[in-house]
Image (tube, rainbow, N blue to C red; front, side, top):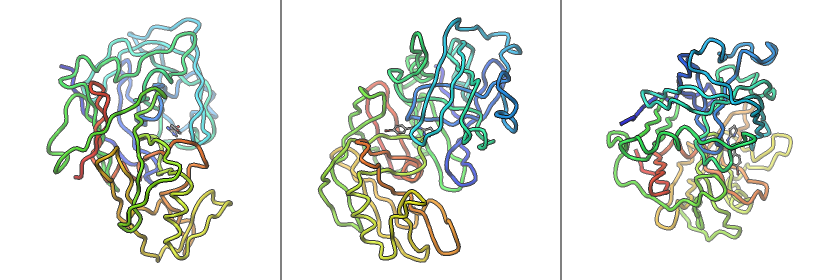
Length: 327
Ligand SMILES: O=C(NNC1=NCCC1)c1ccc(Br)cc1
């Protein structure tokens, strides 16, 4: 089989996790993103003004590279960042799991937030290829390409709080979690690992949602973005919390002890965050920015790293399910 395992190292502010990937013999640190389906890297054909500080992929130095003539790609992410460029095929190795002809997208241009994030050399999209942006023909993700050669058609994410975690392709390592894995059915029609989430808890008190948007498991998003009524209900229980439009979200006094927050993962499990694990950043001597924020009526709730790093997550491409376990 083609199983593989790599580290997932948190960036300084835990806004993302980076993993080593080898493409055509060249190693770069990439952000595994279950919320998108493009595999792209900084390339030597970018203006230096955009790539300085990054590792770049140089296609002319890869003996296994082949150009996808006439193809291009262009992607925009939920945080407003974007990238675009050209396409080829090469051998991709992630911790021993190898795909010999992976569609690899080379950036010729990226938005400012990618340039300034010098630890991030690109993204590995682990969503579904129905949202891949390659034209004229969408291409499969690394996981879709390798799934049938894995011991089990799964990958797992063990993101950690202030520590290096791991991504595993092909096995569910029992040493990485405790108790049961709570699975729920995934609806892949929007290209995401999407599931129903109809209840939530604040301080242990369960509430029925009003908007009840479906949720996605998105390793590429830092925060937990819930329906606006849920965010308002949560911060309504935090006495100093205000919605600060200049910061783009709810802030509160860092000395507050926050209530727990739970979100349903399908119909039979609630993933609960401790209050101490909910703050995303300290923005000044007294003020903190919450890791739970509203989705501005976006119609999808995003379970990002703030939640995922508290659990062991299983993405099952065979059963088309998503599961979490405590650890
Ligand atoms: O872009 C998304 N996830 N990935 C990444 N974010 C930032 C860099 C990578 C994303 C996915 C689904 C929805 Br709905 C909103 C946003």
